[in-house]
Length: 179
Image: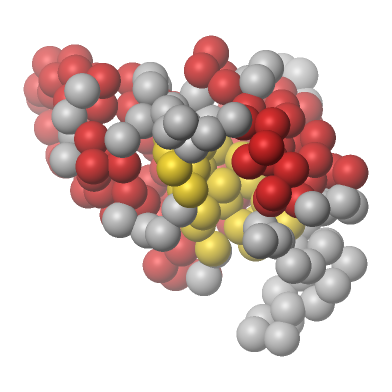
């Protein structure tokens, strides 16, 4: 099973748009940066796939939001690594909202990875996802629309076909993706 059939030098038959990146990785840093995300990033790069990972390509001193949102627009695929504490990060949820917006408007292909979380817990905002949204509802009680948007966005992504890592070895999964 191949995750991405084309490299950045290939052209898409469905669009003449030139992409700056093949893949945008969306992840909660503390959960997966030094493990799964790093393995996936390394494997994709070894295959010649142009990958954006936030700690790699952002210019020091750059305000993150506008630059990252632009990178999402310039990517062909977004791999969203839904880990235990993904929804606790407002930045991850803002990023995810932009990813879904691009999916609907420009055809960005979104590939969710359920990193040791139950897809139905993500979809139905249970467990750590429910706890995270309870905290967001308290924090954003004067702007509850943000939280409602984030919940709807997370549900859309959780309803997409993706990969569930539960009870699987990360190394073997990563090898299957880019071999």
